[in-house]
Length: 306
Image 1 (tube, one colour):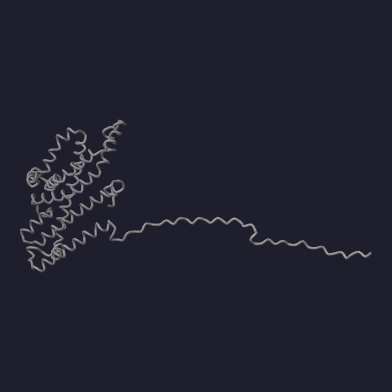
Image 2 (tube, one colour):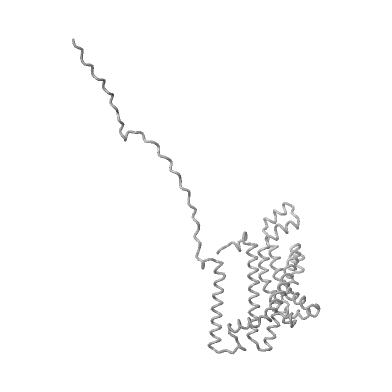
């Protein structure tokens, strides 16, 4: 019996998995995008408060000067009545040798008087705040000093004090003294009751209370008094120069105004008045800058943008 031909072994079928049946791998985590920091949009140049504080007054001044020049030209006013701004500026440059020296004398007297008034006013305020009885007894004399016209007192001071510069400094300091006393005393008194009770609870001394509580509370009032006193010191210096009537190299702008009036040199008079006005504006701007530098980081009067 013949044996059957051995059959070839059958290959096992290869099972191919359907792509859909293959297990899906977990999606790779997507890295989170870093949050982009949006910078605040800077306002336009003319919308910035600092620029407005400079540009707006300058524009108003230019308009007024243009009106002044136009009226003088249209009405053909003579220079001995009202000089034009152009003529005034020409006189300022041509007579600068005399006006510049007089400006330095007036500024020197003003600054010295302002320093004397500031130091004396602060010391008097410290004395007032130590006792209510002392303030009640002496404050009316400070008011009396303020309401007395300096024109009536200046001749006596000039007679008593032999040095003309020192006498004019004293006269100007008397004019600028009261705002420092009034504002600083008010600031030293304007202390929050809770903070004052806290200092008393911790048994703070008078010196500690003065240095750590009263003086920081009084700084806004003090700088407000400085802004007022700086202008009054300039006014007092000019009035003292009028009364003293000193001439020569030690003459201030007031003497230049008097001399120009006697000579009917009205353009020089207007030029001297312009220098006095610019000096007053410069003093006020300087005091405003000092106030912003001292209070800009913490007090609401300088940090508010309304």
